[in-house]
Image (cartoon, rainbow, N blue to C red; front, side, top):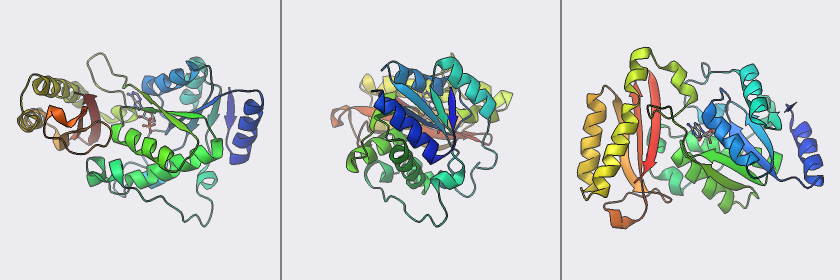
Length: 279
Ligand code: AMP
């Protein structure tokens, strides 16, 4: 398992693997790896590809009052996990490899990035995500990149980005990995107190109950209202629970509006959790 920390070393590494006929799969992460990230590595290995995990805590996707400085950084454990999973390389650039002095270019987003949901609560988030993802794709020239459905709006944003700008990297979506009680794995789950950890799976159970109510003919508006009340009663501060079209993320009023995704974001204690499921 090779660790690369400069753009030049990454590009040499990728050129050599491509010359051997290898397909390159990039797994972009911010580290603090868990089994959800490892599922993305395995999705790459399942394609018989050369799998490179990038680890970069991207400052431009954090808002001013968010957890950039306290975000968990666990490089040695991450290296062990990528090695055990069979990943081939880690790319962990210093900030100046992504944002060189004088850096002044960003990508302006519409479509799934501009329909509310996360964008309403984290207005500069997707611009930061799109910029770092475009950089990582340009630097690695990966054939594929795996992204988790856990960050569903992000998945739609990067899929659109890669297509719109012909970045040459195809996005592979990977289903959300969960704890046995339904809580979606997340690097931020380490922030949860024991009591909040016990409450946290409510988000998933409410998503399931809301999806089931909609499937069995309840109106979307009333099912979402009831789900929102259940989340608040459990002790969460709810940012949103919404039903959206599964790919455009446009608002939907009924089941006939197309494939529907339920998306939620809520705070328990100081920890903000997001989750989603298909209806
Ligand atoms: P992060 O390190 O949180 O930026 O996440 C890196 C990638 O891992 C993103 O594509 C996430 O959607 C994905 N990911 C995070 N948690 C999970 C999970 N529980 N299941 C599947 N993918 C995940």
